[in-house]
Image (tube, rainbow, N blue to C red; front, top):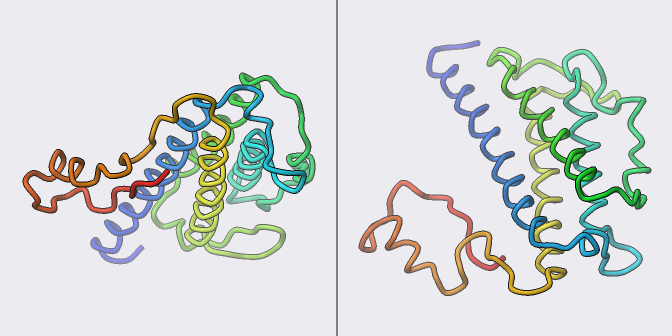
Amino acid sequence: MGTESEQKLARDYLESTRDTFLSHKEAADRAIAQVSDAGLRRTLDEHTNSIAIIMRHIAGNLTSRWTEFRTTDGEKPWRDRDGEFVEQHESREQLLARWNAGWQIVLDALAHLKVEELGGTIYTRGEGQSVLLALQRSLAHVAYHCGQIVLLARVFTEGEWQILTIQRGGSAEYNARNWGAGTPGPNLGEAEAGD
C-alpha cells in the first residue's frame, strides 16, 4: 500500500483508532463501576434504555461487526439485535463478561489488521464499505453509546460522583500540572470538563 509515509500514516491510523476505542471503553467502565446493580437497570422513562441494555447492545454490535469481518457480513444471522434491547436480568458479572468479550473482538480485529487491508471492501447488511469506513462507523457508534452510559451513570450514581475527566473549574490547575506554567504542551485533545 503506497509509499513509506502512506504506510506510516495507515499504521498511525490503526493505532489511534485502537487507542480511541479503548478511551471510550475506559470512560464507560469507570462510569459503570460507580453505579449500583439496580442503577444499571434504571431508565429515565419508558422510552429510554438502561445502562445494561446499552452495554448489551454495544457488545452485540461489536461481536457481530468484527467476528470474521473479512469473510462474513457484519450483521450476523445469529445476532438478535432486537433482543439486545430487552432486559435480560443478567448479573453484573455476566453483563460485564458479555461487554468485555465484545470489546475484545474489535481490539483483536484491529491487532491483526494489516495496513493493506484498510481499503478492502467488507459488508454490513449487504452494503459494501471499506474497512477504514467500517472502523470509523463502529467508533462513532460506540462513542455515541458510551456517552449515553456516562450520562446515565452520572444521573443514577448514589453518593459522590468521581469525575472522569477534568474537575469543573480545574482546567488551569490541570494545565499547569501537565503543561507547566501556562505553556501548551503535547497533551492536546484532552477531554474537557463537565461530565
